Length: 237
Image 1: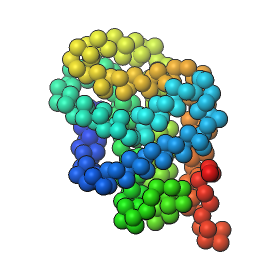
Image 2: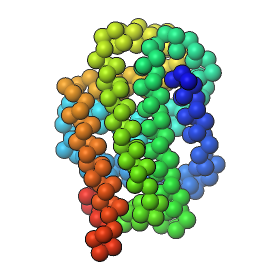
Image 3: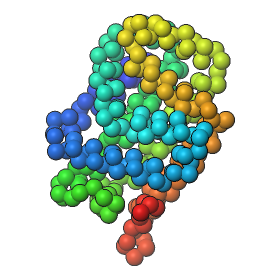
Image 4: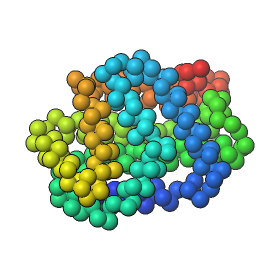
């Protein structure tokens, strides 16, 4: 299956999610996502605030962790994908694969947060750290969260590999004018945002490895109920 065919399947999966037809669930999901983004900023403040990492941090928070920005992108992609075969001929398949993987990672983040939002809504609970801890334990998706983190790592390394290939980078750059002319701007810009975010980094591993290591530690802590039955917090106040 081609990268664009994969992308089409990812979008079908996204639009099938229940919050699109449930205003209360959508509101709760937005609250969960806002809390997650705020938590990520606090947890990784030392990493995110380094000048060379700021574009990468913004890419993570706005592109790979869902939110309204992703919904707008999904709407745009849905309109252009039926006509996107031309872009598939212009841009290298590996670049489109990186974009498709990024979309898939963003959708998984939304799905996992949606499960938290559904539980919080059913319990009529506000979004705060105490209730998020309870939701994480009730939903019990530690393994799925680990998959999410590993997917983010794979997206970063795949994009970095493309960025470091002169021929692939040149081909992608040459496709920009045609992509814009044929209204493929949303997909092109999503992929390009990843390239631009990683460009200031000497090595993408200097960002993604400490990020993933900390997130995996938090997943383990949150789901550790052996300490007297009292879960450890997210590591932030």
